[in-house]
Amino acid sequence: TSSLSKKIKSELTKQDKESRGPENDEFEQFLKRVHLSKYSQTLRCDGYELLQDLIDMESDEIENYFPKKPHRRRFEKAIKETKQATVVRPSKKPKPVITHKFALIIGNGNYSYGRLGSNPINDAKAIEEKFGSEYGYKVFYHENLSSEGMKKALNEFEDALLHHKGESLAVVFFAGHGVQIPNKNQTAFDNYLLGIDNDYKHVRELERSELSTRSIIQGLDKANVKILLLDCCRVNASELLRSVPSENRSLTRSGLKIAKEELKGCMTLYA
Image (cartoon, rainbow, N blue to C red; front, side, top):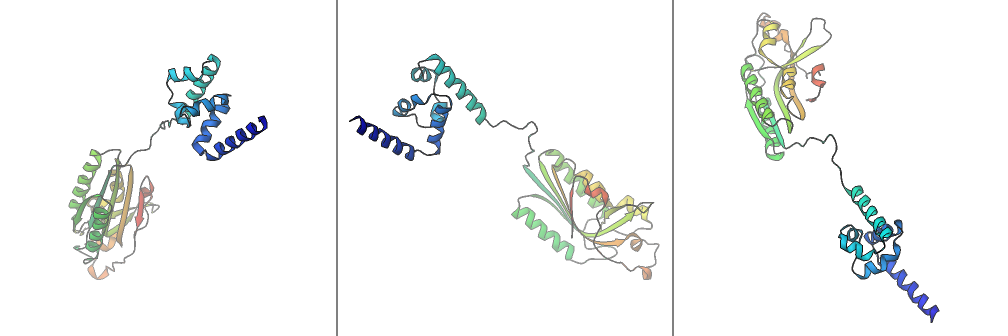
C-alpha cells in the first residue's frame, strides 16, 4: 500500500509539474529560493498559484500561512526585494518626448534673375502634401518669397517652436537658388538661400539681405530635432551681381555643398 501511495504521489507531482506554465514555475522557484517550499501545497489548495498572488498577499494572510515568525520574516523580506526588482525606475535624464511636429516649406522659382520655372513650386507642394497630410506636421507653406519675406517666414516659424520649447521636431525645406560665399581666407564658406528679388550690386549686399543656413539653424535651437532639406541650384555670387555684364554671366548650376555650421546639431540633407 505504501508503495502504491508513493507511486500515486509521484505521478500526481509529475502531472502537476507538467501542467504548470512559466508563471507557476516562478511561484515554485520563489518559495524554493526562500526555503519555504513546504507551504506550496497549502497555498495552492487555497488558490495561490502565481508569484503575483504571493506579492499581493495582505499582512493577515501572510501571518495565517506562515505562522512561524522566522519563516514569515523571510517571506516578507523576499517579497519586498521582489517588488523592488520589478519596479521600473525612471532615468535620471528622461528622454524628451516629441509631441509637436512643424515644417517650414518654401518654394522659390520666379526670380528676378535666373528663373527656375515651376519646378521649385511643384517640389514644395509635394513636400507640403507629404508632411502635412501623411506625416501629420503643422505646415508653414510659402511660394516665391522675397528675401525679406523669407526672414519673416522664419520668424513666424521660430515663434511656433518657442511656444513648444523642448517638445518639438522642426523641418525646413527650401527649393530655389542657393549661393555659397567663401570667407576671406577661402578656408570655409556660408550657404545663402535666395529670395526672388535676387539683384545685387556687390556680395556684401547679398550677405546682408539673404537668409543664411547658419541663421536658419540658429533659429531652430528651440526644437529637440532639427532637419534642413535643401533642394537648391547653386550659383556663384558673382553671377548675380549687377556689376557683372549680363553677357558674362554664365549661371553655372550645381548642388550646394555642406557648410561647416550646418553640421552642428542639425541633420542637413541636400538634393
